[in-house]
Length: 330
Image (cartoon, rainbow, N blue to C red; front, side, top):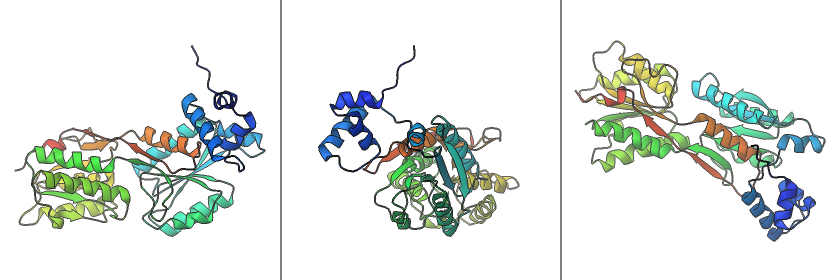
């Protein structure tokens, strides 16, 4: 049995207002009192109404909705999976998606935003760099949702992020439960909210277990497997090497694999982000995993359901044990 989706007419009846008033509220037009807006938003929530954004744009004489997706690097498996998931979620609204990568260059990120905006793309999903994003206020007609990271310099922004603190916490707790006390952290730019939060979870787990937080075991700026492998070799060559590693991104986890290939040591390690073939190594790679489709769908839903108030969506994470995180200390 197919359940009929609620319409704007249903919302109007539920709120006791005209259809035109509902349309004005949905399209964020002026001259609607705050009390009426509140009634309409309450009716929308109660009925579960969702506007067909593509149809709405066509009715106003606009072209088909195009969503811009701006990411760090689409060649990274996380971003390619995110792009595919955003495209699938947007397709349900008959919307097109265009992609751009800024390759760790904040100036290119801004160029991509302004280029897309200048070409009529006024709905953007952005994985923000660590740079200040206050300049986005210069584009009042731009609808933006940030994914994976909280942007700097914007107090009012819609954000869909992972439960990064919990991810760092459960990964480190998992290693602590196997007897490890010297656990190294491999992370990228600490100015990114996701990286900072994962590191916070790591430190919180160590402190809760009464283990020392040794900052000499914390490595920042790991953006590629080669650098991660170099740092693993350096740390393992110390007189007091770590017995376990926590990698805050999939590139660092791959670097650990590469570094351990020709070494006699077998430290335990946990990665953040799943990746292809992580379960075929011996041992398999223990990771903190999440549903990237949920991440993408939440971002598209926020983008197509504008709100005057900033919103935060937190996507849960889970630890998947495959062997590498279960190795005991030597």
